[in-house]
Length: 285
Image (cartoon, rainbow, N blue to C red; front, side, top):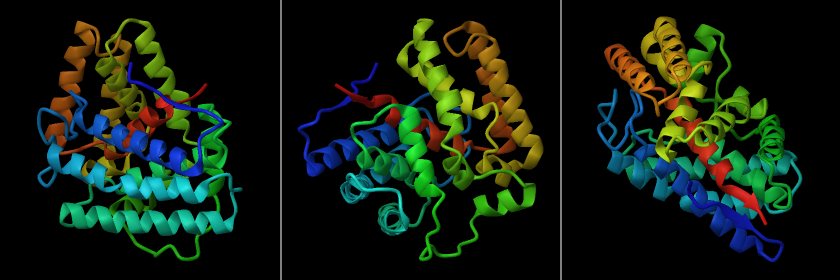
């Protein structure tokens, strides 16, 4: 099990911000390297992506460390109000611009900036209350507030949300990240308890998200048939005992073949897995 972040009462705002930024960055890197992940960049290949590599994902993650630091620093012991929402939005957009400069315009972690940024801010708001559910609810309060300065972009994700009438990343955050709290974290802990190695437990957590998430990355590329195939394939792996079993490994390979044939990649689920790893590593002494 990866080392957790321990937060004591004597930490200054700067010390906490530094630790949170390091933990968030490492969670992004660990998600990128995790293998095997169907359709996604991992340590084996670029999955269904033509413009992404593992090296690019790692460099992108490192470029966001300063953004997570500033988010934590500016959220230190603050209430969830309009002023904080606008500051989180401003820092997130600046971080996205920095990421795009590092990647040459390739969107590597836009969704992760939103999810991870909210959770980093939520931890810093009340560092003495670090239960995952409490952190997620504080993040939800931030996400529910309007940001008058947010640009009205029409991304692929927002197009999929509108076309298929499904909840997107914004709604997931506003609802308190149910795919993390109710699915990914319980599956991660369950797989560990059953004796899965850490990488298997993390892939199982990813699959738990993939069983029900209306992943707009998948919808944008393959529509509803591809999304249904992802849901059913991920559920089949878990019903076979997860990726620590032979049957689970076989069904994971079938799911990967199907997603590559559909040219789909569960990027939304990957963002939530990275956020899951972050929450899993935040603890209090």
